[in-house]
Image (cartoon, rainbow, N blue to C red; front, side, top):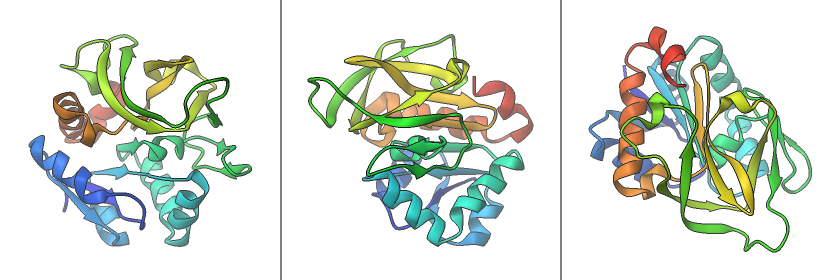
Length: 213
């Protein structure tokens, strides 16, 4: 049984995420097997590109229901970049597209005079002392590439915030579900620390709901 399974639904550079987990000292495998994904202790939902395309590809394989079922069973889930956005109710990218509905909120495009997409390093201001960010300094820099952000209904799920024109949620966690807007696999030592934290927190699923925040 794999410890952490990275969901392969035909989107994103999955091997870089797998290699980052390995560099962090964590066991993770890339898989498109329904059986392997269901047997894993925890899941990672990556995402690159357009929200609608990612949701279409995920649903085409039945993995949208698999993710929802796994979370309902208490399995830890980490959404990365567009994968974090997919955790929410809907996105306005290329019209309205429904998300997984695991967290309340919607995905909006950056507006105003901002350069879009935001590409490069930006800081994450922590809310409280979340276990997912243990050992990562407050206002640490992570690597971002995105044009849309998550407008969160319940601010209690926001454990990390980033400023780009105005503050937005860059790290979220509720129960066994968490997400990061940045790319931990491109964020050097702090990104590896976050992945190691997630791995450590998935060993005991009963403990996860009390530790992600």
